[in-house]
Amino acid sequence: MKAAAWLFAAALPAAACPLAAPALQQGEVQAAWQVSGAPIAVGRHFALDIRVCPADATLVRVDATMPEHRHGMNYRPSLKALGDGRWRAEGLMFHMAGRWELRLDVQRGGGTERLRESITLP
Image 1: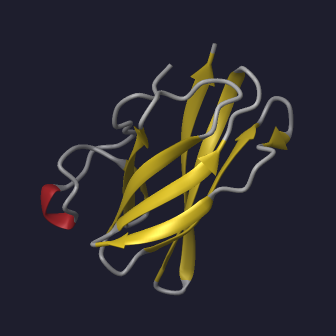
Image 2 (image 1 turned 120 degrees about the vertical axis):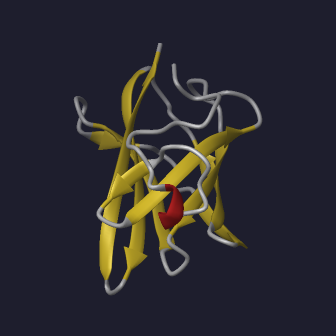
């Protein structure tokens, strides 16, 4: 399970964003996230600390689905802007084991970019 530390999917140009390591990327939008508190476990609520850049990007939705089962979470997480491209998503819960696809929807310049990360729970 890849849930207890920062998770990354693509190389990050150092000058493009204040993120210190590679991050999820779609177009010019980049994001990195980490679990806040206890690791993700089946049937337990969790929160994510998320960093989005560039500065004019806005995180508008955090969600997760199980593509093989064609369903999502039973809970809708709340989002809170913390400033400086930092966000907190609370109230997520993966209610069953298997592969989940975390989705971050980020608005920038009149469009929305969808960043995805695969997470497998035993």
